Image 1 (cartoon, rainbow, N blue to C red):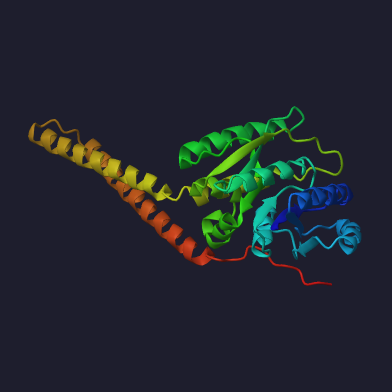
Image 2 (image 1 turned 135 degrees about the vertical axis):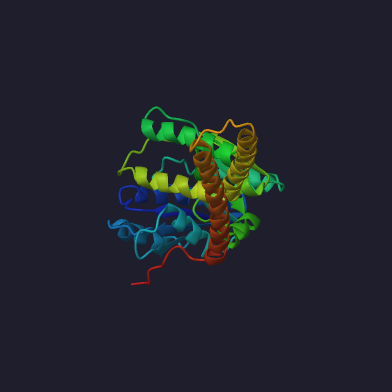
Amino acid sequence: MKSITLIIPIFNEAQNISNLCNILIDIKDQMHKKKVELNVLLIDDGSSDNWYKIFEEYKKKHIFFNCIKFVRNFGHQAAIMAGLKESESDLYACIDSDLQQDPNILISMIEELINNQKLKYIHCVKKNSSYENKIKTFFSKYFYRIFKSATNINLSPGASEFWMITKKVRDDIIEDSSATGFIRGFFYFKGYNGKNIFYEPKERKLGLSKFRALKQIDLGLNAFFIFIKKFYLIFFIFSLISIFLFLIFGLYILISFFLDLNRPGYSSVMILMLFISSFNFLSFSLIIFLLYKLIDIVTKNKHYYIIKDDD
């Protein structure tokens, strides 16, 4: 029998936790019929409400429910990474706790992975819904376009942390520092054989949305910083262009000097500007290159969260 760990980051979801647990109990029974053992691991990302007291009652009755608590809010990505690192299974899945992502889709996802051994991940991609935040939808749409152009990673608009992966992919994620901060992009960055499933997200019925513009901006910047590994090449190319213009203009000045076409002051200013810009671009490219190397060393196998001791 195969095992699967379902990772669910949770933050102040007291109003949703009972519905979520009841649905997962039913899904466990469905998976058991397919010879799959479900384990649910909730990651409490520094909640301040009483969701855990409600969850404890379910945990006492159903041993497949487990929880890891953070000492404070470390963020959605850190919660997912903790779930991957602190569990052992044949398969791993991730879903949000607000029930906008239908947990029943997990059954279809696991069927896809079991029936097609070549697949390494199943990624659920949401269709735009009329009730969703228009500003979020707008920026999300253009973020993915720019991200694809800049990184050559074909990440579909509407992609979220709603996926299922094999143990091989999970092992690669926790070993590779480039996965930290934007886990969903890692599947595409590595080129695993996978499949997208499109779904219609549900409207949140209980509780408040945890969408925060600043956190989304932070997530987007992380994605660019992590996956544009050759970013320093952009500055290096600009430095080569500047050097080329510097040489061409220098040659023009020499010719103008001998032909007595020189304008006092103008040529020397242009030469100085081109030289400084060439030097700056070259310096930036080297600095960024060294920063990437330093970050790779420092962040390797680093934990981005602190687990709270049991009370």
